[in-house]
Structures are given as structure tokens and as C-alpha cells.
Image (cartoon, rainbow, N blue to C red; front, side, top):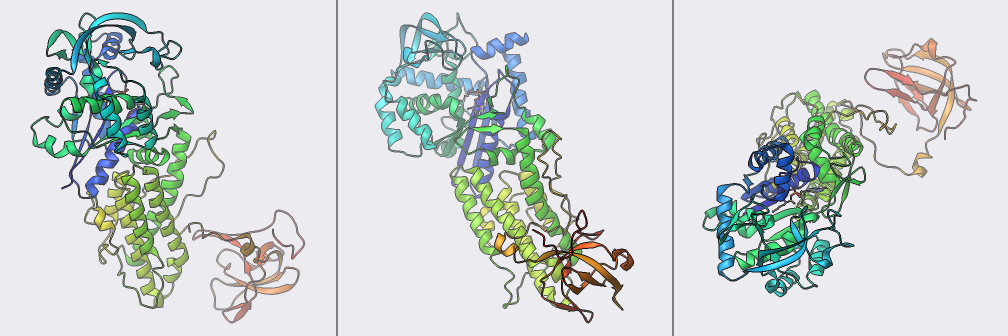
Length: 639
Ligand code: ME8
């Protein structure tokens, strides 16, 4: 069934989980859910990297043994992921016995094959990185990561003969354009491989470090933490003989950030080659999240805690922001203000408003029962909803396959906006006024329900909770599951006659605090608050003749509850019949200045010819006249 295996880095337990860890793990979860929707059998691995000097030092700072300390921090990661709706299949810890056994087996295998040798070495060692640096790698004699001067140490150690595999690796990468992607990281690895590749020191004497996996061929040493960590990707599947390993390993996608490109792009393929294990399929490398334009760091105090954001804004909104904001492969800036803006505009305004206005209409006009979707052949009410939906399904799928999550979401949002426009243009509230247009009303609202079904299906990988909530309220059988991608490719799956539950609001708007407010807040959407109308040019707008008018006389129209007949002076005098009787007394209007459309085609209302229209701000609860803020000469044009 075309298996799909996705991994995240296994995170060091020397720090609490932060935004960057959350991003990689959400990416893996999104991919996993997407491939499940495509009908594939999937496996998702994450975990913690617990050995090494860094962990020993962090444990010491806490006054704990490395194992107790590692257990505590590992638990933080393990319990965070479900909070973010991350559904991993397996959580590996490098202190697991099964993992340690595999590390030893593979070390022995490579040693027996002659690719690990013993030698004395003197070199510049960075304790922060737990590795030796060559002169060439240092920047002004300092470690490029820690900016510290490495200590020169002389040691006898075991070395992994990486140099032997350099030519093979170059050729392997060059002949497989998507082995490492995006391309910029592939180029980075190839550039590094243009210089001679040195053998890798893969042991640490126990006199210096005991917290690690003991070498099977020399118990005075533990292995280098990277040699241990990388093997998690195969040990977690039950290497070498398990069924899981055989099925999933050939289809593995690693997800990492650029910081660990070298171990994954160079050490790992060579380790696999030396151990006789087939290569991984793809290495997918993303950029770094910075916070308020600076690198995230404990010392700057700007480390972003994913759990805080989830508690404040909800898991789906947080996941949406991560996927929508970052272009996979490039760095991205995090700010809470940007997160709130996305929630308000994309989630509350676009998606939330579409969902609530649509369902309110189904409840209002059809007592909550999905109407029939058959269209009269002469009707053009389905416009191009169907093709817009299918286009968005196709574009979303293509983008997801390329890891272009932001583009996938843009394709979905284009369709959300098209559906909102479809409602504005077809104006179901107008159709509802006339019995003769009942069929059209049914057809329009059926199309809207169907559009919402497709939208719910498409957002599932990124926003699983919202997708399922929408599905429940759309009366879909997959309320607590996900829709298959192939079902999104077909228009007309919504079943007429389905009774829908009472509707809910998907995303409440979030008030930006005063300091952050843009001053351009839009109103809380109501059920019939129309979405913005399709764009028009200035030229079209200018064809509307808006003028200040003084009301000269006003009287009730006989036999009408709503209409008033007004005599206005707008440069010249004419009559307007306006629906103001329920909100205004005729005598209060006389002498008032209002704004009128002066070039509207005359129309007869209750037998009286009306030559214009009075502008009001009206909804079902109130009706206010638009006026000028001081006396103006009647007929003054508005601009
Ligand atoms: O490197 N932006 O663990 P680690 C985006 N144990 N992603 C970030 C990030 C940021 N600012 N900061 C961290 C290790 N990450 C090793 C890995 S794998 C066999 C061993 C994410 O805890 C990103 O995925 O330092 C990065 O590659 C990873 O956390 C590094 O996690």
C-alpha cells in the first residue's frame, strides 16, 4: 500500500521543547496525515537524543543523574506532542535497550568490515559540539557554533573511514536531484564534499565521558553521540529483520533543520553504506525560526514555548500559523502579533465567517436539512464552483508533495474566498424572499455545503480538529475521521436530506492589545454580514452619482408598513421612496441632510416612482441614515 515513513530529528534533552522543535514535528505530522489521506500506510517516528556530554552537563546543573534528568525532559517532549495534536507512531529514546543493542551491532559490523580503525589523534576539540574541528572548519580559530576557542587534546580514538566513501557519495547525490532538498541544501552538501573528507572520530574515552553506548570492541570507550543518534531511524523500526523495517525503511523521509545538515547529508549516508543498509529516500531540510528578528536563545530570553501558544490560541491556529508563515527551506520570523493577525484574518474572517454564515442560512431557510443540489438546466448558479474546488484540490496536493505547505494553504484559501464571493454574488437572502426562486436557493446552498466539505477535507492535515468539527456540522459520515483525497476530487458527495446539528463558531476573533492594534479591525461577522464584494475599478465607482440632499417633505406611503415617500433637494428636486418607516418618523426627517444615489434608474414602488436611493447603514436591528458632519449645499457631490 505504498508505505510512507517520516522522521523528525530526535531532540537533545538538554533543553525544553521550543518553537523550532514544534515546527519540525508539526511538519512531520502534517505529512503523515496527508499521506494517510492519500490512502498510504504511514509510520511516524520522533523521540529524544539522550547521551553525550551536553546532557551530562545539563543534568549536573540540575543536580540529577543523567538518566533521571533525561527521563524528565524526554517526558516533556513526549507529552507536548499530543497537546499539539501530533500523532506519532513511536517515540524512541536513545537510552532504550533495543536501540543500544542496534548501535552496538552496527558498530561491530562496520568495525569487522574494516571501516573503523584505531589511531592517535591530536586536534582542536569543542566541548560544546562534542567533536574535533579541523583548522579549515574553525572561524578565526574559534568554533563556528559556540564562538569559543577549542581545546587542543591528544587522544587515542577510533575513526570511521569516511574518506573512502567520498567519491561514491558525490556521485550518489549528483545523480539523485531530490535526495537532499530543497536544492540549496543539496548544493551546500556538494560544496562541502569538494574538499577532501576527513575520517570521523567516533569514540570518546570513558575517562572523559561515560554517558553513552560502550563500543562493542573496546569497553574503554563510548561512541560519539551522533553515531548513536542517527541510528535511531533504523533501530526504531526493529532493524534488521522486522517486517516494519522491511516495509517502511525504503520509503523514509527525514525532516530536519539546516543546523544538522552535515551529519544527515554526509555521515548518515556513509554510515548506511558502510553498514550495508539501503539509503534513505529523501532528506528534507527546513530553515530556522527567529523570534522578533533575532536568533532564539536562552540568553536573549526569547525562547518561544509551544505549549503557551497552544493554550492561548489553540493547537489548530498555532499549526496553521507555522505552516502558512514559513516557506519550507527558508528562515522565517516569529511574532505573536503576526500569529494573531493570521488568526483574525484567515481563520476568523475568511474561514470562520464562511462556515457560520453558510450554516446559519441552512438552518434559517431549510430548518437545518441539507437541500437538494439539482440545478435547473437554464440556471447558471453553479458558476464555476465545481472547477474552483477541483483546482484547489489539485494545487493543494501538488504543493503538499513538494513540501510547499504555505502554497497548499494558499490554494485552499483561494477557494475559501471564491466560496465567500459565490455567496455574495448569488445572495441567497434575496433568493429566499421569493418562493419562485426556491430551487435556486437550494442549489446555491447545496454548492456552498459541498464547497465546505472540500475545504474541511483539505485543511485536515494542518488543522485536524477544525476539519473534524466542520465535518460533524456538515453532517458528513467522516465526522471523527478524515476524508480520502480521492473523495475530494469528486463534486457532489454531500448527501441532501441530512439533518445538521446546531451550528458553532470555529474561531473567535482575538483582540490585539492596544499596542499591537492596527486600527483596522473589521466588525464581528454576523450571519448575513456580506463578505467584501468583488473588486471594481475606480472608473466604475465614479459612475455612481452620490450627492448631499436635504429632505423637504416626508410622508408614509399608504398601505405600506415600511415605505416613506421623500421629496428631496439634491441640486434639483425629486422623489425617493425609501424603506425608512420602521426606523424613522416622517416629521423627524424633514430638514435633515442625507446622502442619495442621484442617478439610479427610476423604479416604481407601491405605485410611486422613485428617482434615487437614500444611503443607510442598516442591519436587522437598526437603520441609521448616512449624513454629512455639517451643513452642505444641496446637490454637493461626494468624492
Ligand atoms: O540537533 N528553527 O537536537 P536538537 C527551526 N539531537 N527548527 C529548529 C530550531 C529553529 N530555531 N531550533 C531547533 C539535535 N530546531 C540532535 C539531532 S537527529 C538524529 C539528532 C529543530 O534538540 C530542527 O528540527 O538541537 C533542528 O534540526 C532540531 O530542532 C535540532 O534539535
